[in-house]
Amino acid sequence: MSQSYVLAVGADYQPTPDERVADSLFSQYERVIVRSLITSFGLDIFIRDQHGGDVDTVHNVRQIDTDPQMHYKNAQNEADYKNRGEYNSYSYHDKNENYRATKHNTRRASDTGTTTDAYTGKKVAFSKSAPPEQKASLDHVISAKEIHDDPARSLAGLRGEDLANSDDNLRFTNAALNSSMGAMDIEEYLEKHPELPLEQKENMRKEHARAKKAYEDKINRTYYTSPKFRKDLAIAAANTAGAMGLRQMLGFAFAEILFAVKEEFQKAANQNIRDLGILLKNIGRGVKRGIENLKAKYKELLAKFADGALSGALSSITTTLCNVFFTTAKNVVRVIRQTWASLVEACKILFLNPDCLPFGQRMRAVAKVLAAGASVVAGTMVQEAVQTTPVGAIPIVGDVVATFCGTAVTGIMACSLLYFLDHSEHCQKLVGFFDKLHCIDATVEYFRKQAAYFEAFAAKLENIDLEKFRKEVAGYRTVADKLEAARTDAELNAVLQSAMKTIGMTIPWGQGDFNSFMRDRSRTLVL
Image (cartoon, rainbow, N blue to C red; front, side, top):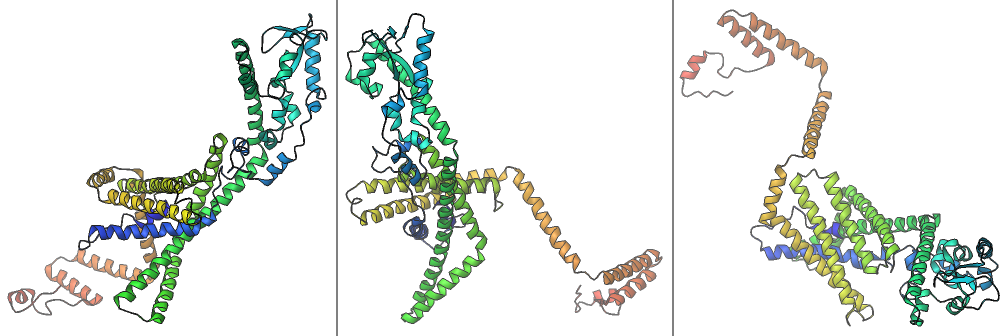
């Protein structure tokens, strides 16, 4: 929408002297709000903002059971998790090769048949006759069941047995402690056993944090470098790019047609036309004129699609990156999308300068784009606030009211800020100052104009009759030679009169004497 605001209220907006500023400003509010309403109410159907973005992330899939709005974005990922199978303790313990090898190798490396308890720091024995408090038992620091039921593990496509029995996740403790922990998370266990020594608590937390970091690194590295994630990211970016480009293009097109129809209505009102048939003809004429305007502006129409597509793709990628760390709500996704739309437009003006604006004017145009983008963000926040009120909870009506309030705030803020940027005395001074600064764009534009001049001159040269031109040049050269050879005024006069007759020039004072002509006050000399 920010691009529509800048288009609607640009540097060409100037209130006429005989028009009240309030009326002129309101007409701009109307234009921006109508265009915004077209986009928000009619064209947001092309963009389906989702809670948590459009791509499954490790963070988001773990929120599905606790966040009622969260769901899988890829149906295959959901199916993989549901088909993970039931937890089998045997396959995670003695059936696993690394689990058995760790117990065997540690026992064989110990001369005394003992090892250190990773949690208590005491010695534990491998003897079968040792009491549970002193008997060595191999523990999964992150419980095997927790790993098996972790949606992120399924998302990454990793085997739970391999993760649970990696060297990072296996530590020896005493059999009594291992048995009492069962499948509980260490923090959950510590909460239920506040009587444990402080040193043991610290050791358990330290081991859990270390194992958790290694586990998360494997999950994140595997999933975020996988072809599956890249494919989902590319599809989401392409879909958002196409939808955003279509939204921006159609918004521009519908607004052009609407304003053309409005002008026809105004003409009908001025002519006091009340016949329905004539009014309908005027509407048809307005639609036709709007379409003709679009044909003439096809380059601008395509530019709108390209700008929207680029901002849509960037916003989709940004949203996915945000959801790697935290969950984005629908309105946050919309803010990201509109922010990118503003940034793309601002960068286009700043770096490409398609309208060849001086530096000061360019900075003001960038400020307008960013101001419009900030207005969209403010309108989105108002819309979200209205949705939390009792009015916003009313079915259908609540969404309409919330969207309208957000759009109205956006339009009013945008127009006010843009009016300020165009008419503020301080802004005018800054623009004038920056316009005086030399920049490479000014030099490039100078040579661009010179190239256009030479191109136009070359086109004229192509139309010259070369043979005729050569004869004319030869004739002028002959006259020049005779003038140079003349020795007296009489000779010079004769050469000039002969040349004038040759080219068909009439002597202004006729055939008489020039001095006599100038003395006659009734005569007029016309050159």
